Amino acid sequence: MIYLLISILCTAGLVLMFKVFAMRGIPIFQAIVFNYISATICGIIFLPDKTPLLTGSIFSHSWLPFALLLGTMFIMVFNLTSMATVRYGVSTASVAMKLGLVFPVLLAFLFYGEPFNFLKLLGILFAFAAVILSSLKDETQTPNHKSAFAFLPLLVFFGSGACDSFTQFVSKKYVGTDGMEEFSLFLFVAAGAIGLVMFAVQLINRKSVFNFQSLIFGTILGVINYFSFLFLLKALSNISWGSSVVFPVSNLGTVLVATVAGILFFKERISKINLLGLSFALISITLIILSNITW
Image (cartoon, rainbow, N blue to C red; front, side, top):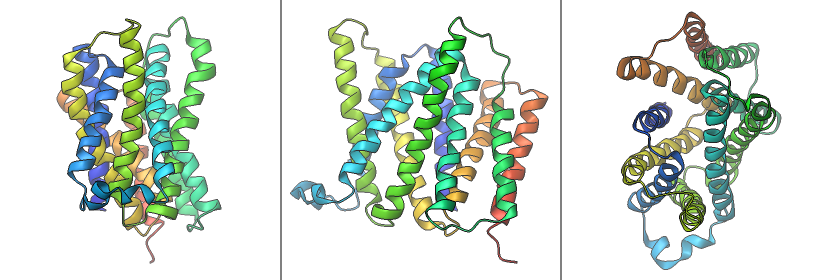
């Protein structure tokens, strides 16, 4: 469980960093690009054995194409989420992203043969209610309300679910308990390379200007992002309860930690309906964990 706890803390840290970006007026896309470069450097530093990388034998791994594809998906979903946030608001983007947990949970039951019982079903239902209630905010609708609702939140929902499901698949079929650091490295290499190309095009077309704060805070974000994903992989590989437990607990734990941290460090206020959502999150986590205990 320690791997899952560390992943939750790091993922909550990502959410809090985006709050800092908004407060300081830091360009999000630039920070995302530098974040992936920083995560790549972390991947190289924390490789337990650098010999395969130096000799080139690391390129023979069967999971390499999946790592590159998943890295591409990651940066695309990151950008879709930021666009949905700007056009429609934090609530819709947050709900769309976190409800993506439905995909890996369904796959865990239908294709990976993970145990299913009434307590787990009840816990998952509470999880959906918790995500929606804890994300509801009183936000001003933008002129793009209808068009954004029709496309961006749906894309974020499916994109987030696809990323989680693909991570689940590769973890179970290819990575296992070995090679997690190597897999994480190439995922971030792919995302960073695509991000750099997109950023270079923006600079050439003068649609963007280099921001030094994006470099600094994006670097910090990348360190957190690296450990968030690495420890999620470790949790998927080491927790015997399966991905039908890891993904709901991870998402709900992130909501809880980020909300409490927002109250403590950013003086955020939560409504009664948000508080009800957090209560549902605690109930959901408890039910899902209890569903895997043999009495």
